[in-house]
Amino acid sequence: MHRFYLHLLPVLAFIAVPHFAHAEIAVKNGEKIAFLGDSITAGGWSNPAGYVRLVIAGLEANGVKAEAVPAGISGHKSDQMLARLDKDVLSKKPQWMTLSCGVNDVWHGPRGVPLDDAMAKTGTYDDKVAARGTYKKNITAIIDQAQAAGVKPVMLTATVIQENLDSKENGLLAPYNAFLRELAKEKKIPLADLNAMFQERIKTENKPNVKVLTSDGVHMNVEGNKLMAIGVLQALGLNAAELDKAKAAWQPLEAAGIMAAQKAAEAKAKAAAEARAKAAAEKPAAKKAPGLK
Image 1: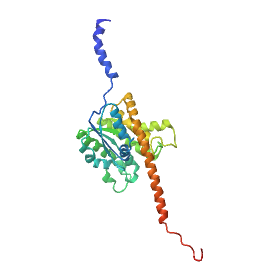
Image 2: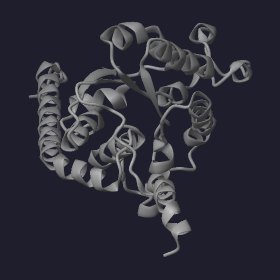
Image 3: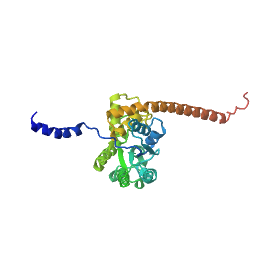
Image 4: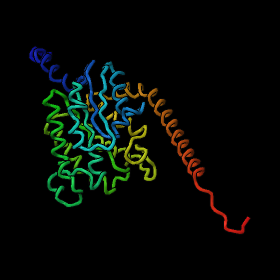
């Protein structure tokens, strides 16, 4: 080989390496991840196979022991998450924070949070809408305050509202998710585009009358939790091989989740039966008409 090309080999090798090199997992051993969200996130922690649990297990399967800071509260919207950000997240001193917010801002209708000032003027909201602010302002404030406190945010687009992708609710949710994508790009923060992942999966499955990813159209079933966890782990830098390790580690959690769901269903059925029996026992006996035996 010509001496000129021999001289260039180290340079060429250096140029080629970044193309094939794998970026490291962003989360490091001992770091905390706060999971800020609504009932989907609350279930992601309380369910043994919830997405929060799966994220932590997936990281550990790849040699990263992280601590979860659960911060999901059922029914919460962007204004409520902003109000409790310091108490539930920043005061815990996490290094990371995932933000899952948007479903309730849309789903709650008149009690929801408008995307922006223009939407707030449509007249479809209750008289307390001004106090709730707007989604754009609330989410931006959450991200800004987290970054100012040294917490690295990971943006999650809001998942679906009913698995009918052509529903009115999903149409209303679309501009909220478009804003999240734009903000993540502007703030240069990782994005887990869960809504896009959900839409792709639902379209691929093509089962109009079957809940593929949710138990009720909104809250996650086993597959929905797994898909959410995959999206978050990808945003944190895991590659395909590392995701395979994560999925293998999830099997015991999935089994525990299925068992917990069965027990919850049995308990719910038992409580309903007991309530019916009690109501029947307390129901006053019908009075007989005079003269009838």
